[in-house]
Image (cartoon, rainbow, N blue to C red; front, side):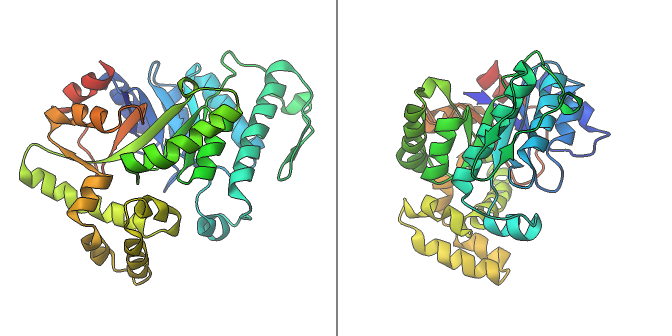
Length: 338
């Protein structure tokens, strides 16, 4: 299991320093999410100022861009990084697609699978010179003239990971992709009983095995060496868990533990914008189910034990600004990547 890190700065003037720092610290991959900022621009800066650390999106929204646009961005990042780029894609939920991005919401699972296939067809055209002739239900790409063709690159096999919560999308990931971004709101039970079986069905459809696939997540952690330190983090983790649990998409993650009624209660509070009240709904048992609490010296062992066989990469989901100068971090990173 490898330990990764998220992009905690988005100022394009300071990202180079941050990327060099996390690379020197020994993290294996630097992930950038599409939230308040574009997910690709920070990685473009990082690609040209680092040499070892992998670089990936966790995630970039797939339907808000044409696959042709995504293909160009990924191709350039793969070339600039010398083959270190991982393209992580996610659908986002219906409301954000329709109301934040103003794009049509239709059959997200099949459309995601088709977008991945389209990306590979476009890249194959650029790398081999084969005619571009992709015709699907949602996308058609059949024009590529030399003027718009960037040509071959040294590392043309760009890994694609997709974000999945429910079985259908996990199956899409297994059948068409190189890996899966497991949502931070998860539990070992949900991974073992829902996510893995669905992904492995997809792998079998594609004639592949578990060894051909990577599961990665950013996992909720309450980490500190004193009760006060852990207590301060605990409240923020409860709030973040409550935020995700209030969304209907993630109800199965609650249902598998018998907490279906909690989802409805949290949703009502979110509509009322009772954010503090939402956190109070997350019990100690729920916190222990969806997050891991440990001291720094025990965290690596606890994470490896909790996710043995279930995850291949983890980063620490801390909904506050972690101190990357913390003197306890080097030993933690070495325990994973050393």
